[in-house]
Amino acid sequence: MRAWIMVSAKRSSLDVGKLIRDDLNFNAIEVLGPFDVVVRADVKSPQDLWENYISLINSLPLVGSCTTFLSIFEKTKPIDQKPSAFILIDAAQSEHIEIQDEIFRMKEVQKVDIVLGTYDIIAEVTANSIPDLFQVVRRVMNVSKNILRTVTMVAFSAK
Image 1 (cartoon, rainbow, N blue to C red):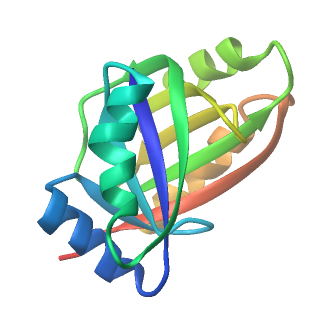
Image 2 (cartoon, rainbow, N blue to C red; image 1 turned 180 degrees about the vertical axis):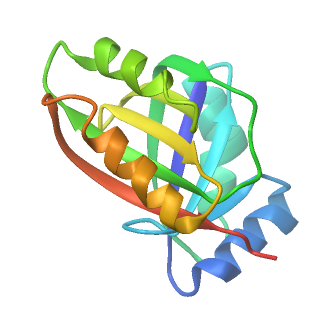
């Protein structure tokens, strides 16, 4: 099962992302948005998630809090190293699978998961440039009239 761990920093998100990568060896991606860092984790159980990810992340001195979303339906394409964003989607009841399928058909979509938590769907998208990325985000937002609201977090390289 995939878990999406959204980390809020006490201070600079660059410091938190670097700390998570260096100290814990997790793939931490800094983002601009309501959270500072995104960590994707493939786990066997909620206990595995807690013991091997969340408790370790929470133990770091610069971490303010973690918000976790568990994926219940996952779709993944090969990861692309282009500008990317995470789109958190709130959708109307009973439309989740249809929306996931529509979004996954877009070539720029790398991952789209139906999740448990405050949002219903998390999509990871890429594009050739930042202006193209914003076009992709708009297209995702307009996939269905049953998308009630979205929050987009643009990822940036820590290099």
